[in-house]
Amino acid sequence: MASYRFELNGKPNRNKKYNVLLCITIEGKRKRIKTDIYLNHRNDFNPKCKQNNWIRSTEPNHESWNDYLADLLEDTRKKYKELKSSSAAATSESVASLVKGEEKTKTFLTWETKEGKLIFSGFAAERTQQIYDAGGIRNWKKYYGFLCKLYDFLKAKKKKEVLFADITPEFVTKFDAYLHTLHNSRSKKESGKKLHQNTIVVILNIFKTLMRRSMELGYITTDKNPFLTFKYSGIKTEKEKLDTAEIQALEALQIEKGSLDWDSLNCFLFSYYCAGIRAGDLLQLRWLNVEGGRLNYQMGKNHKTRDLKLVPQATSILELYHTETSNPTDYIFPFMDSRKAYASAISQAERDTLPSDMKQKLFEEISTKNALINKSLKRLAEKAGIIKKVSMHISRHSFASVAVQKGIESSKVKSLLAHSRLQTTEGYMGNFSTDENDKALESVFGSPADKKAQLLAMINGMSEEDVTSLLASLRK
Image (cartoon, rainbow, N blue to C red; front, side, top):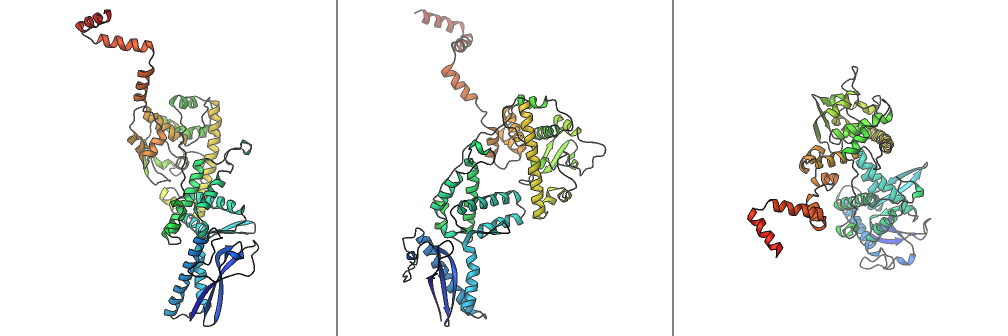
């Protein structure tokens, strides 16, 4: 015969909180295991529970925590029945062992420090590791950044773990408010600038995705997902872009051949003249990607193939780097180290099969070189009298804006940029279809000279009889 009940640990832990214990008794032998519930006050626990109200209403999380304990009790009963129906011994020890293994999935995030290193565990950490193991290094960086932000938030509250039961709309609201207090690492601390709203949206999106996945896996029920009620949104920003005159100003700069600034500007211009190649793809281009006056490569971000005709401006830049000793597998631009282990993966398909740690090294190398180029481009922009913030990615925005100014249809620009959605392309281009608005404004606020010109144009289109009739009406 088996019996189960919840008890409260008689002694508080070092955080002065009382752990709720599950007591399993089978054939007179008792085994207690810790649950994920810790109470601030002993009086919050109801030892004479009836109808699943172990946690009194004096505790703000009583509803979700009582649901959690009820689920745990039901799971324990199932484990006992499973053991009874199998050949394994159904003892209090064996049931407790199964339950403890199940309980690990109830923790959203927990951490500890070993030898000065922060180690995460729990559902969110496991999912982050899965992304890393799958080779999604860019995505992994975002997820790991989320873990660190959540860690900092809870560290300030002297908490070492987060249970699914803790994650309520109120919890997410407080986390959102905390993110708005953080310093923007891209600006100097003395500037006082905080995280941009769109950066906060990225962090919250990861949180939302993790909660949705936990719901799909059955760790929480739909009604326990706080993002069903918590709402947030980003801010529409204007994409920085250069016009043709600013591109020409950069091209006119006198720069020492072979210098970092010279190579950086060539990378930027080559990207611009090849419909905005992303920095990560451009830095990994090899001479084998150039053949018959065309550039063919597979994009790392979405694995789409781009097959582009090389315009004369792009060909001229390539001629600056190609020599008689250039091999097909050599990098075109002199930023990546061909001696590194990752360099042996030449095609995107080969890079996809690299071990995760090597993918991480490649990602970090590209990020470092991209930052170096962007720093150089900032200097060059100031030298050219451009006040805009110029970076490698601005080459994509600039290409899109110039293309639409020259009458290229949005759908064609989308194809050239290899975007999946037209809305993304339109975000790059901005709004250049202003002809109708211009005409409307002119009709309202047109100058007397403009109106006189319009009148003369109208008269010139009239017959002699109409002009005579108009003059007669004006004399009256």
